[in-house]
Length: 194
Image 1 (cartoon, rainbow, N blue to C red):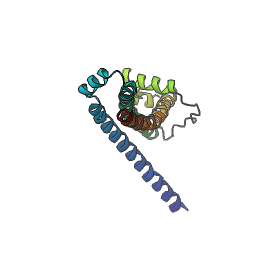
Image 2 (cartoon, rainbow, N blue to C red):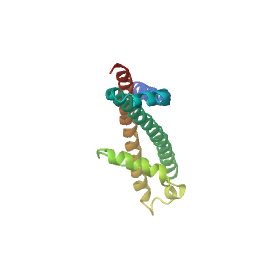
Image 3 (cartoon, rainbow, N blue to C red):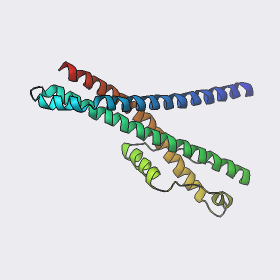
Image 4 (spheres, rainbow, N blue to C red):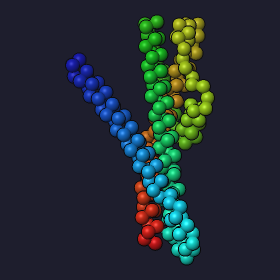
């Protein structure tokens, strides 16, 4: 029974590592292609030609729409990079804090599961906080002062929420990044057709 449970744990860890690696590859590939496509689409001569041909407004519309979509795709890709970077940083820090706490107090940090829904405001707010404010570390003193200070539990809960929101943003924004990329390609093709 114990071997079977360990086997399930090993498989779960293996597939978690695979999905994280694939997400990284997907985002990096999309970001690279989006940036290259943006450079390819942004042709000054083509813009001049389209502006001079005022009679073909649909071609101009689709051309600029493709530029907007590819710029949005690239921007989301950069957002995903920062979300992943800080999500991994927070996860590593939480793991270190739990290890320190267990070593010091021979006890685990148990935090209630966060069932709050994540919305767009949460995603943008947490990303803004992480990028432009001091990272909320849990120092060794907080771990050592546990019985006198319960603040470590609030700090862990806050960091877990940050990690959840950043993870949610990563997956959602990657999907939207793909959608915007394909919309940009379709609009670019339409600009030749119409």
